[in-house]
Every structure is written in C-alpha cells, then in structure tokens.
Image 1 (cartoon, rainbow, N blue to C red):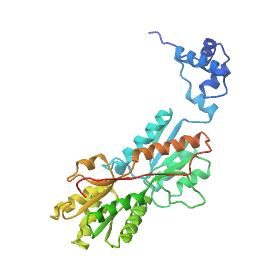
Image 2 (image 1 turned 90 degrees about the vertical axis):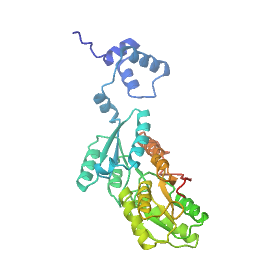
Image 3 (image 1 turned 120 degrees about the vertical axis):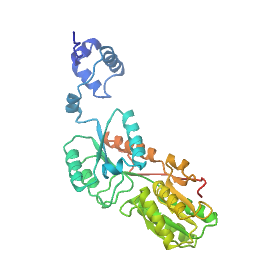
Image 4 (image 1 turned 60 degrees about the vertical axis):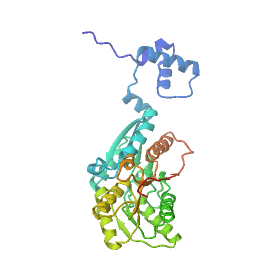
Length: 338
C-alpha cells in the first residue's frame, strides 16, 4: 500500500511561486499580504490539499483556536431535562463553528472543579473562557480576567465592581412586568410566585421584578423558592397552596418549575386557568405541549449563546468595540394556561 505524503509548506510555496514565509503568513491569517498573492497561495493550498500543522501554527500565533464554555453545575444537572443548557451550548457552538473555533465544554459544580478550570485556563489551553449559569459572587471570572484571559459571562455576574467582565443578559424586569400585568388584566388578584435560586442573578432579578410589578398594581402575594427544576416547582406550588388556598394566579420563574406547578395544581384539584392562571419564563419548545399549553415569557437563549460567542471572538481578536454588557429583549407568549 502506497501512503501519500502530506503536502508541506514548501510544496505550497513552489506551487504558488512565493516564499515559504509568505505562505506561512497567509495560512496564519495575515491581512498584509497582497490580494493577488493571497489568492495564489489559497489556490495552491486547495490544489495540494495542504492542512496547516496546528501545533506549529499555535507557536506562531500564540492562539489555540479553542474557547472554553464553563457551566458551574454538576454533570447530572447539565444533562438533566433542563433545556436551558442545550440551548446556550447550541448558540455558542453555532457562532464558534462559523469562526472555525473549537468549543471546549467544562463543568465546574464543585470547589475542586473550579480549581481545575482555573489551572486549565491559566495554562493557556484556550484563548478565552465563557461562563453560563453563574452562582453567587463567584470569584473565578474576575480572577481569570485580571490575568489577561478574555472572559464573558451569561447573566450579570455577582462579582466585585473592581473586576468587571463583559456579559450578556435578558430583560428580566421587563419580562416579569409583562407577565404580572397580563395576570392583573385577566382579573387575577391573589398572585403568588415561584422564584428561582437566590444565589443566581436570574433568580434575584425575577423575584425583584415580581415584587415591583405587584406593588405597582397595589397587590401583595406569597413567595416560594425553587431551583429551576421540575420537582422544585411541584414542592413550591404545594407550599403556595398551603399559604394561600385562594390564590388565583402564579408567576413561575422558569418553565421547568412551571411544569411542576401545573402537576401540583392538577393533583390538588385546581383547574388551569379557571381556578389558577400560570405563567412561566423561558419558552422552551415543550411548553407548547404541556397540559394546558403554557403561557410564558420568551427569553432568546440561543441568541444569548451566540451573542456571548461574538463578544468572546471580539475580545480574542483585540476588538476595542466589544460592549461591556448586552441585554436582550423578552416577549410574553400567551397560551391557554393564562
């Protein structure tokens, strides 16, 4: 069996009629080479089937062409039935693939894994780090940013002001205001909420938004807290029914918790929306098929991932116009549950 030799940089240079150094500059993305010469080199690359040696290229560019996405959650949570993480990953990977970058997915749901992530990034294995689903005042994004590593967060990070990092978020307040106003307009007056985790910006902001919207309507309500999972929605809804058996509306801070709330209401003999109107937050596809279909606040999760990736690519390429923050709009999607 005859093995075909891998085309070399020198072979490309001979085919294009240029120097080896010129070929190296073209394949490493230099924009200072004349267009005609660049076209000749690229044509030779295609004709010969030349594939750059990534290890050698990294020595020249000081780039790994890899970007890490850190999920500060356990693997069991990331790969559960929560659809937030797949949507973020899909958006990030679409944008990075278009830019010919490799996505490195890492989970950091424990203090030990935080240390592993920090060591991995500091060792130069990736060109930048993105964080999603941040909990508490996590010092890791700020620590990496201070070391000169490009960092972007999904959601406004709970970090000290002296170590800000760019982030992408959604309009939690606006979305909750729409949800509560819709319940009030439908005649609901005993409106409770199932809030998200209070160590996450999304959980805090949606609860604050609920309280502000209820105050503006001249109403008060009961609060139960879940962790964005379906089971926590079941438990929280049972607690709210015990606190106020006459409640007639509930805003739930995630679709998965809202699905749990629908089950708890059905088990208690309440009908939705006749007895209790329910609104969630996310607009996962499965919410169209719940019983009844779920009214919810749509947040553009895939777009959030894509926007994070675009911010990261800008930082990696030393773009001075990368915005410090991007807040994406939400939209109330009305279905049968409210």
